[in-house]
Image (cartoon, rainbow, N blue to C red; front, side):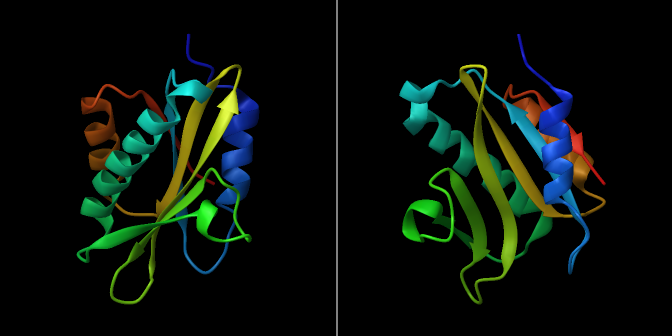
Length: 130
C-alpha cells in the first residue's frame, strides 16, 4: 500500500516555498527498498528526463549529492549542459521501508503531461503545489 502521508506532502510544500521561481512538486511513490538503490536511480533518471522534456529545450545532466558536500547523498539535480541552469531537483526519501522520490521543478502548464508520462510508466504520483 502506498503511503501518501500528509507530512510528506507538507514537507514537499515547504521545499516549494516562494523563491526566485514558482515551483511544483511531484511525489513519485515506489516500492523500492534500500537494496533496490540502482533500480531507484534508474527510475530517478527516467523521470528526470520526462520532466526535462516538458520544461526545457536544452539537454541536461544529473548532478548528484554524492558529488558535493552541500547536498545529501539522495539528492539529485537536472541541470542544463550549457549553463548549469536548474531544470529539476529530487530527493529520494525512505518512508515506512520504501522510497518515495520527491521531484520539484519550475511551475509549467505542462504539469498534467508530466504526471501522465510518469503514470504511463506505472509509477503513481501526487502533485504538490503551494
